[in-house]
Length: 141
Image (cartoon, rainbow, N blue to C red):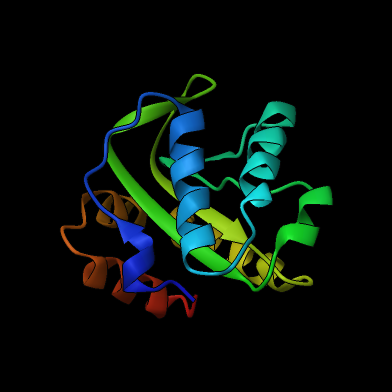
């Protein structure tokens, strides 16, 4: 589900809102969501931080935002210098949109991948989209 064109490496982000918009725009560009989904992602972040630990944040839309999902999709933005997510430093921002409940399975596999600090560091320090994709394929994401 994670495609090379949906991975952006070595980015800098002024704020979590900026990087969430960027992750959402990648989902729009790949045809997974309508532009309104980005607002839904920002609304979710106002309610609860999507920072998950080990440098990972998984911004996603609210339940109401599901009407803007066309098909399930992922986007990944690597921010080696980190971006502040409510006092936590996120270095990998994984935008996610799930049709029906497909995203729950994706979230579980992502959680398994990032629960291992070594795997998280490999994604944070990856120098190519292919390297990231191979890590995700090992978890069948």
